[in-house]
Length: 455
Image 1 (cartoon, rainbow, N blue to C red):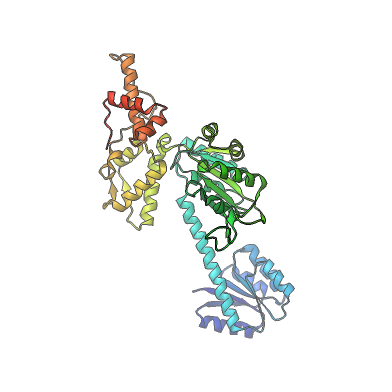
Image 2 (tube, one colour):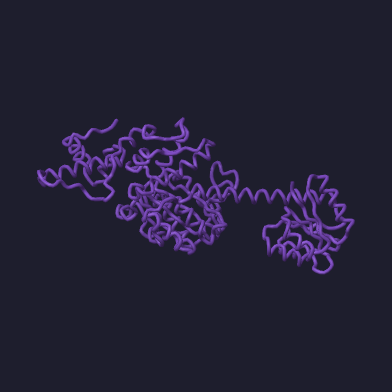
């Protein structure tokens, strides 16, 4: 039951509102003066306050000011029999939700209360949604690499510098972008994401800059672009390395001038956005090959961030696995499950070519498909079950005697190729590219070492 505090020096009005509101299912409390109302707020926490402007002693506007000082989110509707536009404007500036003139209209009072409480519900839902999203996008890990990344975010986020995030697919570049936005001075403004690789070349200008009605076939209405939507907030350009040179040139112009025109329009629109870009490609190599503009690279690369692959921070794998396990058990309304030690060790030994995204997907599958509460090694996919434990000291094993340098070199090469094949899910072409070897040469090595590829 919602509680409404009625503050009015006229007893007849207090009694009348009490009776009407109670009939509508509200709990009511009342006060005769502003001082009484403030004292009452120390013990009560009303959902809404109906506050008269003309009160003995402290008037309604001063009372409103004091209320908002102590509780900026308190819903207050002002009432007055001598209201002027100037008074209503002043009350609104002080934070009043609405202004109702006396003599009171029962219908108007109830509509105003209903609308105010509806806004309050939306604010609370938005707060809950943001908290839920923050949990989903939480950066989990205690490894030195992640601790260093978090420190960099703390330093860079409050500034206005543009950011370029690099890292393999699935490492969590979007998480870094969202964390930077969350801790920035723009956190209460929009965070707009654009996947540059997913938009067809012929549509990307319309997607980024918007279009006017009739600009092209199918443009039946005016549409705001991503730059427009992100005004005063953050624009996240994901997979920036997949943009064509033509689009790169347009992006560069907007980043330099901070203004643009919609497709089919001639009106110049100014924007204030902080740009965060991300890519899984080596942009310096792309520049040398003529696929990426050097001037755009230097414009974006003000604050560089690199997100390490999961295999380089293995100590975080058990923490991440348990985090995702709890998250998906809650999301899917499943009973709480746990990972047995042998399963955790196998997860930590696996190379995770798909990085954190792959781990997240595997844990979600385990939550849904494992019928029992305890997840063991046998429940994991075969490729992860067969992962061999790694040497945590990071040193190669050297036998005491009986092995020549040639044999040691061949043993190391075989183990190296096996590991890289596993990291690339057995794909010979990707592995050859990763180790900078011709595909035909790699194929001969695989054959000579008797390495069996999983089918």
